Length: 320
Ligand code: ADP
Ligand code: F6P
Image 1 (tube, helix red, strand yellow):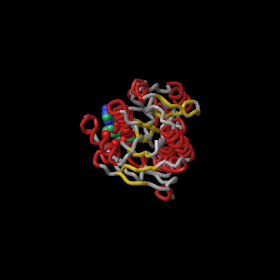
Image 2: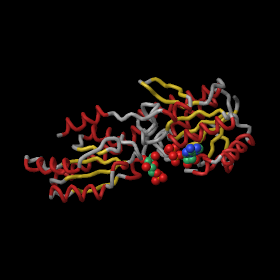
Image 3: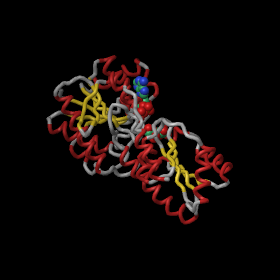
Image 4: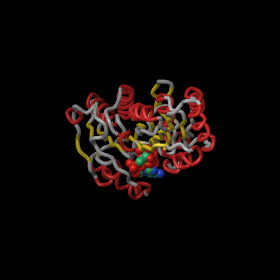
């Protein structure tokens, strides 16, 4: 394979630029032409494709976001829209594609491969860590560290004022950001979509903790696990103690990728180009037990994400 392209799709994640850089430099090292597609599948359909070189990715490794930009393109589920993307690739003589994104992006990659025989390598890039086939996705670790920064700051002010804090974090339907940040940040309660929780019990524990002299409590809420304002109001009603609500929001999607995400980016980007160079079958790349793995797209879509219940239990034992 001599001419390949790279795109980022879905929600951006810190480390996507580092992956693009790794793909570009590895391709050039293998004497392959490398193209960048702007705005994910939306840009691919419109033929927003430009040639990249060594300098295109200079000074990129530490930058959050994605310089290729990203987009949602719901119409990409339509096979005729996919056909337009394939035509754009063939107009540039591109015979292999690296896509960086979450589960939706990998579904699009599977379609391009299954329906049109395009060689596509998928790299997991999302802060949510919601892909079952890989231990970690690009951006998750950095996002959790940003949440930790927020928890530390909240702890300071909540402790000073003897307050209860509820911090909502992202993750769509996955509780991993809340879980990891909750354990690392010493939160008293971690509310995730995967495990039912009892607000009466939480309210009563918070009230008892006040009577024991523990006057500050931290609740981390994953976005898929309930409405932050309703939860806060309910706890206040049941315990008589008010809960200060913070939504961390898009801040956790940005920022300079940390060491873990940069190393993962280097390993994934390098592997993706190797696979295309060697004309291997389309697949997704992941990491299991610190080994880079390749998984057929069929298995990616079938795999069911397991929640780390043990870590969840540890969180609650250590914090009370
Ligand atoms: P993420 O990749 O982060 O999960 P999305 O779920 O928004 O983000 O998916 C990104 C893009 O992938 C969508 O905007 C769409 O273009 C494409 N996509 C999502 N689901 C499918 C699907 N079932 N078939 C084809 N393409 C899809
Ligand atoms: O998938 C990443 C993510 O940030 C989710 O955590 C969140 O639910 C969603 O994207 C937000 O999407 P948007 O950028 O479209 O608001």
